[in-house]
Amino acid sequence: MSYSEELVEKVREVLQEEDGLSEKQMFGGLAFMLNGNMACGVVGEELMVRVGPDNYQAALGERYTRPMDFTGRPLKGMVYVEEDAIAADLDGWVTRGVEFAGTLPPK
Image 1 (cartoon, helix red, strand yellow):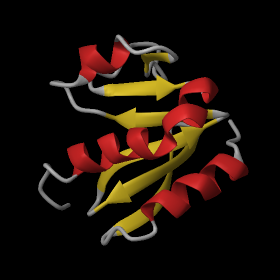
Image 2 (cartoon, helix red, strand yellow; image 1 turned 180 degrees about the horizontal axis):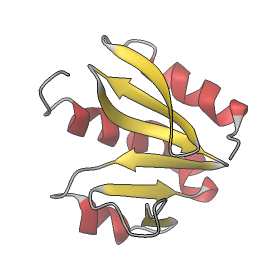
Image 3 (cartoon, one colour; image 1 turned 135 degrees about the horizontal axis):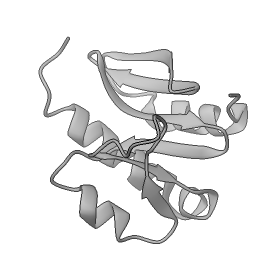
């Protein structure tokens, strides 16, 4: 699966000040890793965000989100964010992923 280079560039801009940032091909898209832990990524035209299990239901309750079900089963703690929500608050969604990834031990 391909991914939006335009969205990837926007996410890179948001993350440019983060230490420990790397990129990795995952889930048919491009994932942004902080200290080896996935924070967010781009699949197709959507953002995937690792919000964590405690914030999962709240994130799903927001408009333009859905479970990340790349494998055919939802990955608890991870959501897809559609274009309308990305346009409204890309920084906020990326920050959620960064905050969760920051709670995990470095790999």
